[in-house]
Image 1 (cartoon, rainbow, N blue to C red):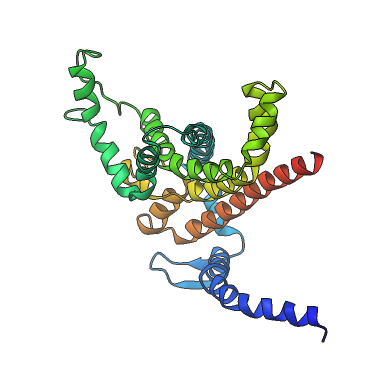
Image 2: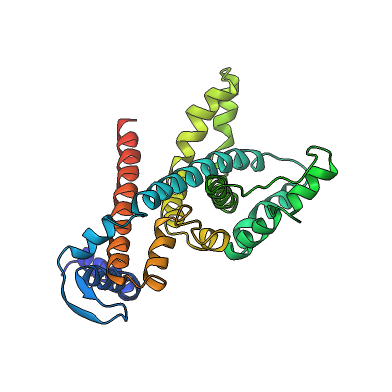
Length: 294
């Protein structure tokens, strides 16, 4: 065996513990869920024989399925999209030199460092109709004359859920982009300024192309995290009323543990996994194709 071959085997040997760990805690559970989705499962959780696609047929014909999938789509698009835009802007600001920059960076990270259940509970309290802080502040400032019901419809409830999702996701995007911004050589901007480049030209010709790797990583991870996010929706509304504010993750949880429809719940989890893989794959393909064209 040549030297290169020995080095390759040594590298695989060092990676072996991580590969085994990934297989045990990721691949094996996924395989089990796929198996269960094609099995007969009683309400007590007893696994029977092969069920074919009956669990998937039942899952796709559930009354709330279309509403839940639409909610999930809007949830992911709004949270990932807006948090990316706002996070990018904040990263640009925090990359500048100003007094109190370290304190500002510490403040930005707080929402991300705090438990999602705590964040959702705090926002639940803020938008309370009777004694919520939002109404109290607006009343004291004279902006409103009487308390506003900030949860008057399920559409507004869902908007609040999305806002909390955006609020807690912004710090992650901000620091991912900030790490990319700090790796950019300042001489590139100095040369651009000498050539008379405008702010927009520097942004689109230097900043965004060089930050794209960091932005890609944060976006892909965000799609995965947000799609699988459970605490915010469950803490704020539990999908009420009648699954109108549910996302796929909270809906399949309720389906499994409350309605005892374990077969359709496992089928929905498989559907969610496939959808997530497709979305992440399409995004990554689009990014790589764009880099090749450049």
